[in-house]
Image (cartoon, rainbow, N blue to C red; front, side):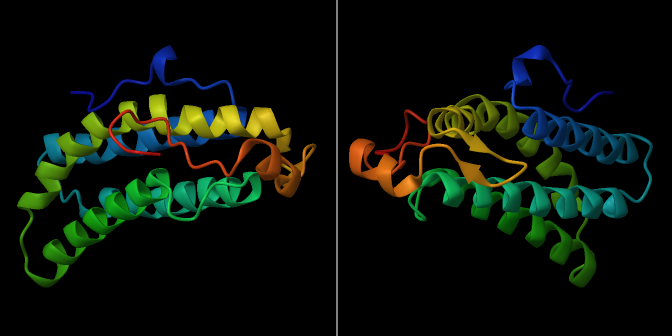
Length: 163
């Protein structure tokens, strides 16, 4: 059973982010497949966690370079998801409790599409507006100038927060 299908709905037309998101979905499905086969899913989950740490760090660098406020809710979601994933590993390794491995599969597969559609899409939009090149880390429109004219990028794309 596929945990999360990669569809055109997940494509944001930002090649590096789309590639990273496709890898996330692939690793989520490998972990789900291990669960479905009754195998030890912890190694696959740890691979997903390592990828997610790198994935979110990349987005955090992009947010900093394009002028997002450090306390934005996009970053807060990253921190929350990583905290939960790390706790799942801790429960499995230190407490021998594998149940969270099963629970978090559903949670991640439900959370990710909305996060990509709202928050990551807002990041891509900001990158485009500021002329940010993720390969070089350069902005055509420097953040200081952008922030004076437009204000800091605090919007996360979510309708459920005040940013």
